[in-house]
Image 1 (cartoon, rainbow, N blue to C red):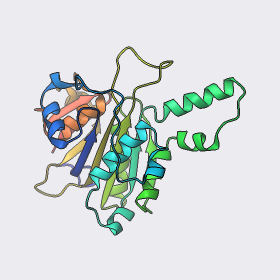
Image 2: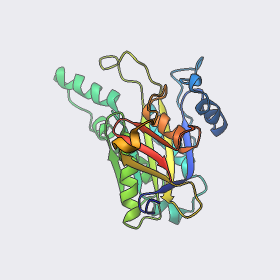
Image 3: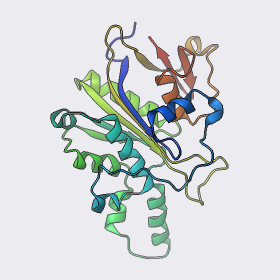
Length: 254
């Protein structure tokens, strides 16, 4: 059995992508590998984010709206004092790349940069905005680790819980890349929120480890889902395996 500092359990989760706005819709999609990505949806759709005042909401790009929407969902019903003391870890492979590209284009044209646009383009702008809206005084961090940024955020959460945090909010969000960077495979705007705590006896305990040969042998790693969605599928129990690897990481149930 893994130590409680390494084994975590999911208290509450939330997810959003165009066409999948409810837990029931997500569970149907995660249970069927052929259901991703959702078809016949409005690719320009964004979450409503009604929790945020309109004057603030209108300045938030789609990536930030997706991230904040699932953050609110994962912490729904939390008492103000609990919200204030819960660390937040934000993960995204590219972050606000649309904003960054616009800034680079301004530089290329010798145009002045907007301080507001720059402040919203930095990687920790989204969790910082959430912390302001929710009056969070606990540590807030942002990580990026390529396709496996959610795994990096999970490790950060393990560390925070080992240092005494009762619970940690992990938010992962991705958006389609702007055309100069767009790959051949399109992925939709999406956000995933996980409220985590140390696993206790009798709870569904999830452990994330670096991949090792003995653990990885015979473990399936191919998935039609993006890595963050594939990890969510495993965390919620829709993947049949007790151990599942992707990239350099292996998830397991203890």
